[in-house]
Image 1 (cartoon, rainbow, N blue to C red):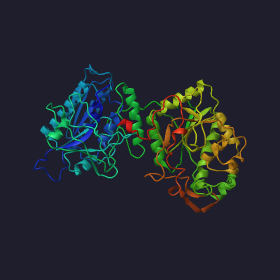
Image 2: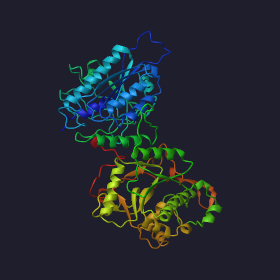
Image 3: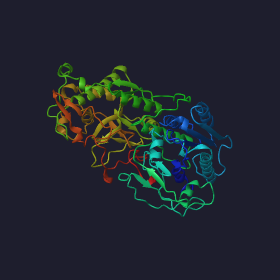
Image 4: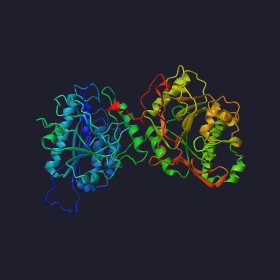
Length: 578
């Protein structure tokens, strides 16, 4: 095992700015001078996006210097960083380049992700060298940003300077509670960096600034972070705004490939509410794309929702997935004559289980969008497809995990029609039945949402044969009826047979990007008009949100139990990672 504090201290110094003395004759018309210190190792997968964020900073480039170092690489980091520095040097005040081609590894490390003592000491020396260069040569401030940090807030430099602190960090987000500070450092740090955890009550939601625990300085200059206590300089982390993202650090035994997959997930998370683009100064070859063994991957998207389409296409491109965009049926464009021409009637006595309202035209549009996809599957003779909606976020290693499940399904010769990849489980009284011979798969019970699902040719035929237009209800209520698991027996009497073979991955691999009430949440199905009177509008989700709210806590007795890979969902933070 690595030293308990090694990895965490690396995270502590991964992103902070150190205030240096401003010269008295500094022109008030000029921005303060900033040195950005870049230390990269085995970062070819993250550098294009990291450097793209640096380029996108809203700060005069002539007031920025770049100090860059790299060493002990087994990938293309050195060549990539050199290429960027050559292209960027004319834009910035000056560039300093400190590469080390050999050796490619440390003698005392277990692998490229192991924080060995020699690696840790070398990193601290580089940090100290960057700080010294900033003091001696030019800068008023220095920003340390690790090469897997995504500074998605382009105003981060001005915002940190405005805090008027000697040493302050913008609080970075990850898929868990992990962030770019370590709140367990005490004065008892020893030469092996074995830290004793000292718990702090973090009131991040109530305080503008969170104060770090200080550490006592050692005489060795490479312990740069320790110097703050000796000089009575406190360290702060600021969470006033969103500033950026960083991946959760890996274990010592993990590989560069594992790190690439982790960073891929970080990018997809950042894309949900922010713009993240690779550097314009680097050539980044397109990622090979495939369909994970499916005959087609359909992305259902409203034509007017260009923002969602762009985000999803960028995300799927990063995941290496080839998709076909299917234009969704817009409920706003459905009038009474169109509904009549299609022969659409609401199921008798249908009412939303939470609000009591009838079917909306947005829900009809959603149903017709999925129905059109099922029709295409049958008409083209596609044997298996993946259907995705445009408001989903992906779990870590989504592609690899789903491919493994589908391969196991094929090996087990499982007869299946539909496999939920994302859903909201509504039957929470007892666990669902796991599928023998297939890891991470359960027999689906009553569920909401059609975020994403795999569909077979046989399944598409069964859904179309239901003749649903003259007895329509929301599509996520229709599917449980078709596999005979809807709690309303009266609804089920309208459909025969109800023999859809439905399963669900466990744990789920996709979730909604936003839940009811969150910033950025909007639903075209719920914010609509009722199906038979366009003068009556609906906006019930803001007060009747159980259907669209996040999955509630499932009691231990009802938890699904499956074999195989069961990492905790990225959407639920685990304090174990701290």
